[in-house]
Amino acid sequence: MKMKSKIIFKNQKSQGTIQSPIRLLIVIIFSILVSDMLVWIFIKFLPPLTVWGELLVDSILILIILSPILYSFAFRPLTANIGERKRAEDALLLEKDNFRHSLDDSPLGVRIATIEGNTLYANNTLLNFYGYDSLGELQKTPLKNRYTPESYVQAQKRKRQREHGDLSATGYEISIVRKDGEIRHLQVFRKEVLWDGVRQFQVICNDITGRKQAEEEIIKSKKLVEDLHKHLTEIRENERALISREIHDQIGQSLTALKLDLNWMYKYVGTNPEAVMKLDNMIELISNTIKDVQRISSDLRPGILDDLGLAAAIEWYSGEFEERTGIKCRLRLDDSIFGDSQKNLVFFRVLQEALTNVIRHANASIVNIKLHQSKQGSTLTIKDNGIGMHLEKVESGNPLGLIGTRERIRQVGGTLYISSGIGQGTKLTIFIPSK
Ligand SMILES: Nc1ncnc2c1ncn2[C@@H]1O[C@H](COP(=O)(O)OP(=O)(O)OP(=O)(O)O)[C@@H](O)[C@H]1O
Ligand SMILES: [Mg+2]
Image (cartoon, rainbow, N blue to C red; front, top):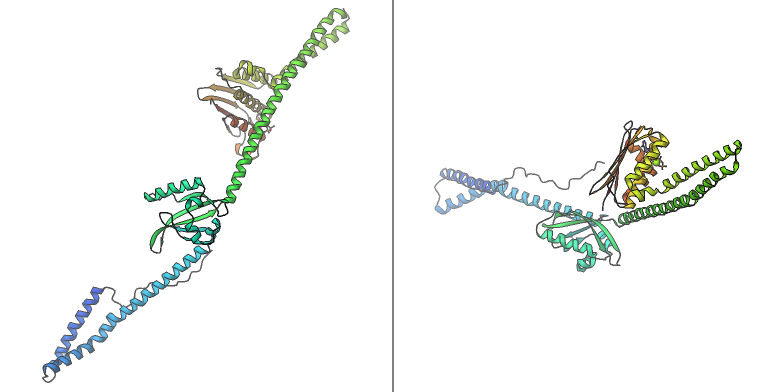
């Protein structure tokens, strides 16, 4: 938007005036000399006069000649200059007045302070931030009572910096204590200004209490969601372990006992081919069911993970995966012992989710799985040669599987890095630090 501005005062160079006093002096001396010469010539043409008469004529004539010269070169410019200066002063006063009015009416809090931090001026908005009725009230309330203890310590630090000539702190946040005890948060911008001709500091404050509270709420609810996710994961893992044990111990053992009993029955069915065939089928069905039960139980909570460690569990799981899907798994596993069972479980669950994604989305024929353990931590990489994905698109669509995976890794202090592109396969790199 174009603003129309009105010129209140324009400082023009006075026309026809002699600005320099030296030049003015030269003009006056020159005028006196010339007029004196003219008068002297004029007197020569007059009949002889007495000394007093000559002096009188001389003075009158010089005055007559000099008066207009002095008026136009000295008196007129001088009065013009005085007028101009007066107008300039008036304009400056008006400007200062306008500036102060604009500060008074500003929706931002404004304070003018000395280098020591004493307040010279405060607008209404700033007084309202504090809940004070007057500038005097603000001035007589010590800083210690106006700021929270943390903000007071910071303010003292900035004051020391200023006193040592360091004016680098120009933008910061403070927390103030209002007259009624309420705490408010202000964003502050400070800069040096001239105030009544002296260098002072202009402090502009914006009330960000609402924003701060919203930020705190977001942080709180984020923490709540994280805690909830952690809690649910723990519950799910515990339940999985329990169900896995129940299936394995109860159903698995019952089925094994049933299989033994069926084997025992061979003795009594004799040579009846129909009965033998039925028995064969029953035993085969039970054997397959025992295998299914073992697989389901291991999927729920692989005992191998706790008994033989991460590398063995990865080997077992990828073997099963290969058998089930026909997708080749190439392993490079560093099987030095990696003690933390919680972290091992995270790695294992991430592998399960990643391989499930490979079956569901990748259309891959090979998966490379690498486990590297070092002093700093462990790194698991799972790379398929499938169709890949447009990572930004996937991330913007709130992918719950990947979000859950990332969150699980984050809970043990680890990181997940995904690299993928259309036609380039997908690579997941998971790093979990040792401590
Ligand atoms: N290995 C992969 N190759 C190609 N695309 C993949 C791969 N892994 C994930 N994706 C893409 O990323 C998306 C998100 O994966 P994510 O695991 O979060 O969700 P999902 O597998 O679709 O569902 P779920 O929540 O059951 O896991 C998938 O829908 C798929 O488009
Ligand atoms: Mg998934």
